[in-house]
Length: 82
Image (cartoon, rainbow, N blue to C red; front, side, top):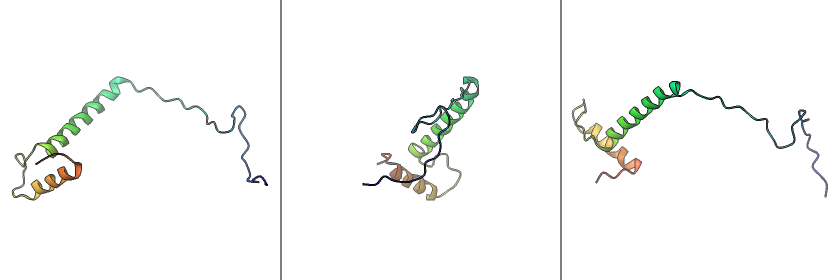
């Protein structure tokens, strides 16, 4: 059988085939991360409230269109509603 004659790129000094150079992951200070974590947690809690519990009590729109939309969203997400 013949071997493949595909061209290979030359390796950089110090690298062996199949290995990529190590990448240093920067450290994020807790002081810069905390506000984003708090904001994300509050936003997720608000979305969870509207999808799971709210039955239109805080809705600014009259009618059932918004209620039905959120109700169908519950079914789509697999949330038990009835």
